[in-house]
Image (cartoon, rainbow, N blue to C red; front, top):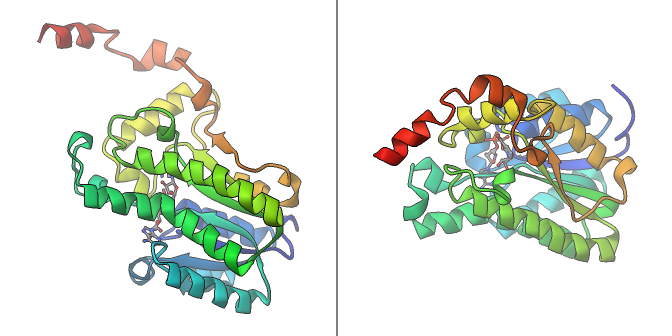
Length: 282
Ligand code: NAI
């Protein structure tokens, strides 16, 4: 065990699919820091993914729940309370999916049923989880809920598609629910806006390699890895961050504050505007 920072704490981790998943790294670290865990994912992801390996490694239980279904979330919290013999102290929402992205539809020509699904899975699911927990009083005082977001909530990334709206809504739910849960039970709710990270969901976005390398070259500290993200989530779950709530915290090596970097000027921006002139001519 690394330290006992999370000793005695109990957490529910949503979204560990395979060893690349950010949630996987968070679960491994939370276990190393002494937490007791319940792992959850959609039934199909549990059948097709590797979550049982993670459960074995972290000595955790796996409970299936489609995060769009309130009854399945209620069932998950009921079972978790039995496993924990009490309430949870932290929750990680590491869930995202867009059928529009999966089907390669252009942002200007979205399928609106798919858009509803994107928002339901990737954003409204956080509201559903918080609402069930709030009504069941399933999180201890000073508990911590973290949802993973991306800077496309604030800025336009041309191929991020309707996930941009999902992330904007996700961050907004953190602020709104953070108020109500903070007042009622001192539970804090934050989003962590993570660098592009090589995972199943990340690499499914068109142009992911450009997102990844551009932000790496732009950021003074380089991209944060999934291990870095996990470290930060551990800090957010711990009692050392008790007064942080309703925030969107950029965990991105400095990318969100940059305009342009030496690396981009000297090495990466190779066309130096030539392609732009050609583009105008055509
Ligand atoms: P991932 O593909 O490993 O995780 C996404 C998870 O969502 C999977 O485990 C999947 O089974 C789960 N999921 C999808 N639909 C579900 C449903 N109906 N019910 C329950 N679970 C469902 O990919 P990754 O990258 O670890 O994604 C985790 C979070 O991190 C997502 O919110 C993603 O948007 C966010 N993020 C990822 C970045 C990246 O570049 N990979 C950058 C910034 C944020």
